[in-house]
Image: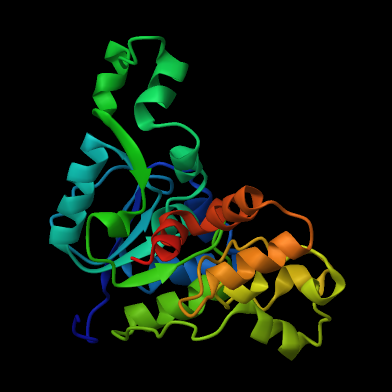
Length: 263
């Protein structure tokens, strides 16, 4: 890690996604000034003009990887960064763009969009040859994951504060269900209602269940999750196995795929 007698150099990078996580940082209101003054922000396209960055202490990386050019840039970021943070569900798990993997092959989807040849129009060559969407951890070592769709200030700020202080934060060792208990919420599943709290990482303070809205898993996967049991429970309340798996993969992406295969 870097010396604490200087401001750490931070870069914010974006790949395939909606850029909602970068916007979430800019919309942190009371914390925005602290974000830009507590560190030396050298790269953040959404907030400043382009700057060449030879090295950063912390790289905040949003979005999944779905072109060869993005993959090349991602590996360059890993080389120049001491700490790489996957920012948001797309970077952590593949996001919405990963969902098509079990519906059609990549070639089939390319043909569906670009015609029978499946060839990408010439102007798209600027972004590089397309490839199936994957989270950044599929290609590089990731030090910290901050899930969310988009990330929340309540989750991001404490983690970012530790990082710029030269500390690596710990993962939440529990699912959303524990936070539901802290908040005094009744359990949706006990009443036959859909909820992914048992397999979703804590960190959101059970904000949706506390507002009588089922958890959809936007904080990503809980490492101790029992997915076969979760699928069976969802089948009990009326979902098919295919529907249950698809709901799990909405925010869990390739981690769900790996867990169900036993990888």
